[in-house]
Amino acid sequence: MATGHNAPQTRMLAHVVLVLLCAFALAPLYWMVTTSLKPLDEALQVPPTILPETASITTYIDIFLETMMARWILNSLFVATLSASGNVLFGALAGYALVRIRFRGRKVILMLVLASFMIPFEATFIANYVLINDLGWYNTYTALIVPWMAGAFAVFMFRQEFLGIPDDLFDSAYVDGSSEARAFWSIGLPLVRAAAVTVFLITFIWSWNALLWPLFVTADSELRVVQLGLVSFQTEGAVFVNMLMAAAVIGILPVGILFFIGQRFVIEGVTQGGIK
Image 1 (cartoon, rainbow, N blue to C red):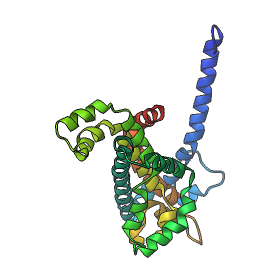
Image 2: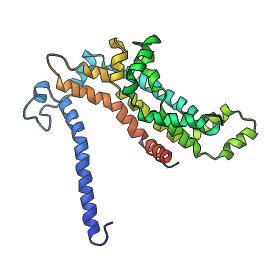
Image 3: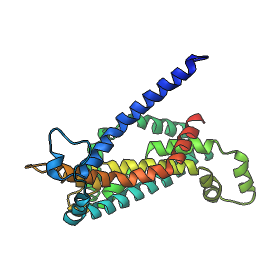
Image 4: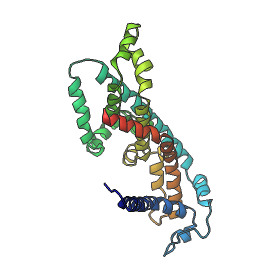
């Protein structure tokens, strides 16, 4: 630990390093935004311009007029919202059951849930695809939503939160004649709000950013989500860089705004879940 006369220099060095890291992290975002404001000839110019010489939002207008971007955004919002809501509901129910309900095999189930963290989604990709196809869900919204509606992360987060709720709160509810379901809805769920927001936001972002799964389980352009829509801006003949960057900016705005609003709950939820 720096003490005495070395402390100011150490803090200054730390600030310089942090500023450089922030600049390095924000550089791609800055480049994406500035490129989206350039006409195509300037966007392809070598060497590139740091600032747009003729900044214009025409590219953004053209995207909504010439493509199905509005439909893709609505699809992504619909899919991500239902996926995140389902993950919150089923994760909370599972986490509550693992803490409050005594049954044989509870520890085994918990170990299996934790073990599933080590299995990447790609490892079960083919099996999930075959199952979706056999159920007749191919090329439907159901195929885009259901796989995200349950996950080990949500179960673990809610279990950790429910562990921190005193038993006396539930015991008093039972004495008053409350059922297990009522205790869950009226006592348990309101007290794990931070975990619910955290799970919702993270699942929403995962679902919104998904590309490989929607690519395989949908065929109609009407079912495309934003990430698939971005691919359509790359053709065999050319890549419209300015339109691609503008579409990318539009694609990250909803999740960026959502995370900015709920980041306090995410930090609180992850911190509380990790120390219990």
